[in-house]
Length: 623
Image (cartoon, rainbow, N blue to C red):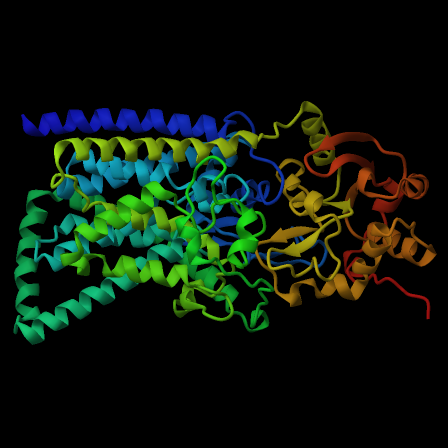
């Protein structure tokens, strides 16, 4: 009967979480009808899923085609330096293959949030009871204001479910080891499964935090066991033998649960490990040695004490106050709000006599708080953080750590009136910070795609030839390689222009990568594209040498036509484009790039395609 009551309560909690997640959907995600497009990095996330759909194969293990001329056409490049989220990319690729483009990322985000809340509750219920466990699930998931404000620009920091559960599982295992409690086989299998499942999340940051939690926790457990063996003369071998007998008995009692977890380990390992190894091997190629970051960041630890309250919140305006180097106009970097800070530190203080349980979390917190990309690169001791460029992005795990700190908090030692007053004040503070944190999302608006956009893209898609020439286009990485060489004019309008490939399915010349190596942009520098862009940005028209280069590049490569972004070009130069290349066949307003006109390539030029020659065309400068 008790199990039935617990099951019913968990079902009610699940329904509550579903309702809260729907509220999150309306306040943060907002649009569940259209593909996710927008400014900044927003449009690239759908494109990476599309790339998976077109380049993933099984032989029999998953393999991703990384080297091609699908972008940087006709030169080609290695696609390894994307912001990979293998799980999300695979799910998106399946949905795209079955149903075409759609709001798949929004639904994946919604279910990620719901899974985080339910997963935390399921893991903590046995040790802390359903009420405290479900409260922790709500706080970890919906008080992560930094993650909320990363949507949709940095969507990779919104898929946190497996990393959140990894921290919780590690905390429970450390706690049980310290308190000399039995660690169930199923919890061990869950943690092993999470190792592989985490590899499906953002590889540059989010998966790394989960691996860091595992590494620090195991190291602490190892030191603790060695200390006990020396000081108490406890035989680790004997303990291991007894645990093994207990695990065999537990497996006999719960065979289905254990086999399900083993199956999850096998399936996730099969799907993710080969691709992760492939990406790692590609990134370690000798030609990619010493990839530049060109970003120095540091987040002042004192930002942790900024509340999320009206007119007093962690807006970027505090940059001068704290003298730090935060990411652009990042909102909430380094801050979790007073509610989480109070309950976290309060729980840590009340459990101070058993502080050893929290040592791994404290170490992780300190490593992240004091990380400086140049002077104090604490996180670089972990090899998977070799591309960790932005110090403040660790803010995404602070709510997890402080919520786990808070599990030890209790007000039972206080007198009834004081306990009641303190509870009411904390609830009011939590509500005020929730209101403030989510209110900033009111300004976020989705960009639904108009019918003229689809008509335009379908027109381009149905043209013969395999590629399309965007002018201007953008070649750059998140580490500024390409932009600082002049290869991405009008960054704000063009950086994710390549994502239109989802709709027209042609090869493109430009591409934005999470990071680039200088060697990858050499063909564009050697052929003179930086100089051509400079002329355009200065409001000048092409001279005869520049027109010869542009026309020959267009003529000898297999382009279906030109997407001309007329709002970004000198208006006085447009008549010559039409005179030399032809009249536009269709035009439309495209997201970010504003007005675009498509000029089809004449049949007379299609017959002159010579890709080998097209790759060697260079801008000849007057001597």
